[in-house]
Length: 126
Image (cartoon, rainbow, N blue to C red; front, side, top):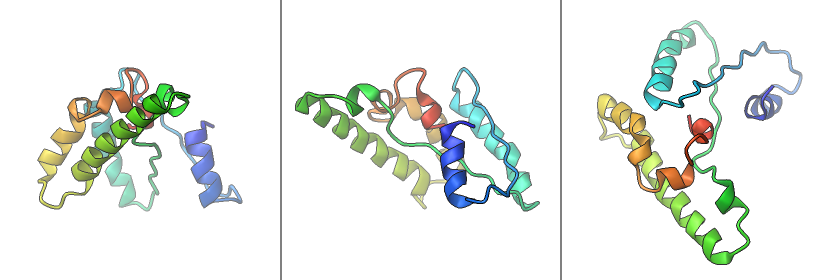
C-alpha cells in the first residue's frame, strides 16, 4: 500500500480488520476529472462505505528541505497563501456549490499553487 493509504488506515483501524480499496490518480492530475470521480463515489456513502482521502496542502521538497533560511521562509509564505485560499474554497459557507467546484477545478491559478505543488506533484493535493 502507498503510505497515503497505509498510515491513516493503520491509525484508524490498527487491527487491520476492514477491507480497503486504494484508488490511483489519473496521470494527467486533472482536478476536474478527480472531482468527477469523487462525485461518482458519493453514492457509496449512502450504502455505508467509508470514503477517506488523505493529502496535504503543501508538498514542495525544494522548500521542505531548504537549508537557506530565506528560501525556507519563502516556502512557508507560499504555504500560508495557498492554504488560506484552499481553506476558503473548502469552508466558505457563502460559496455556492458550483462556484466551489469551479474554484477547486482551477486550483492551479490560486495564489502560490504551483509553488506549493509543482507540476507533476499534485497527487498530494488531489
